[in-house]
Amino acid sequence: MSPTAPDTTVVVPTFNEGGNVEILVRRLSTALERPETAEVLFVDDSTDDTPDRVREVARQGHPVRVRLLHRAPGERVGGLAGAVTAGIRDSRASFVVVMDGDLQHPPELVPALRHAAEDADVVVASRYTGDGDAGGLAGSWRRSVSGVSTMLARACFPKRIGRLCTDPMTGFFCLRRAAVDTDRLRPRGFKILLEVLARHDLRVLELPFAFGVRHDGESKASWRNGLHFLHQLVSLRMGRMSRFAVVGALGALVNLAVMWALVAVATPYVAAAVVAAEVSILHNFLLSERFVFHDLRDGVHPWWSRALQFFAFNNIETALRLPALVALVSLTGLHPVAAQAVTIAVAFVVRFLFVSRVVYRG
Ligand code: GDD
Ligand code: MN
Image (cartoon, rainbow, N blue to C red; front, side):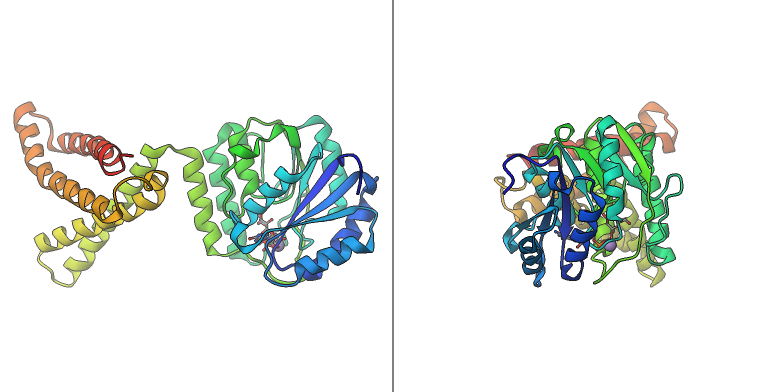
């Protein structure tokens, strides 16, 4: 046991990475100038024998100290990002380096990251600056997804990310521990740096690095990470009302798609419109439950009662929209399209007020 807090904690999230643990610790021990001032903290959610492998390596006694934070099935919240957050929270060091456990992140870069952090709050190992390289991203599909999501994230946060960071999706960086408030983070999915940058005003530095190929085992990324990422962007960027607007806009697309499909199979268009309206209301209800009012659901009336109110209100509103349009045009002489825009805007606000004040009222 080291009596004083280490200077640096290297947080390594692991999910079934048994074959990579020892070589990672060996390479870190060699790379670090003063390995005795650092520790490696494996935050592990594995379902295989990885924790045993970590304990074994800790027993071997390497120059750098090895610790294990194994999360039991019930504690595995937030996946990779949740594991990293737990590691940062657990660290008593002044600096925290975060890196993957599969050696796609070269341990040899860790000293340079730590050194650069003397003059910054976060030092990002970037694949997209200088002679950085994303070569280890398998396949052109994965590479384009990464490129597009990087652009999207930078565009959403021009000040905190766009101007400062070329690779907000990287999982390799060094933080000044005191600059980050872990209670502010809402970890989910894979993108922990994005979460950190978007929620703090940080001094950012970057170092280029070449994203290598995985040493052993296989990637845990999946299409679900893409959904997590979009959800994360929306919730970081927007308040409840904007999320509600996004759901409403998606609902309009659902409405049109259903209408188109039904008309294509020769359904009378009025019947098609009615079915399309109900399907889009159902869509809006389900997405609102999950993404807009998820934090207010408990402690209000049961779901079927919320659904009933939601459907009733939306049906009345849809039915009233047409006479309201006619009244507006004939009373004000407004152009029908402008009048329609007014009814849509008013309906949006009224719907939001009704749903938040009545359906999800605590
Ligand atoms: N504790 C824990 N829990 N660790 C996890 C989990 C989890 O649920 N899921 C994955 N990990 C660990 C893996 O064991 C590995 O050490 C690291 O997180 C990265 O996972 P990979 O499965 O190797 O992901 P990748 O190589 O596809 O993605 C990496 O590159 C992306 C850039 O394209 C990660 O660094 C991403 O954060 C990064 O965005
Ligand atoms: Mn990997």
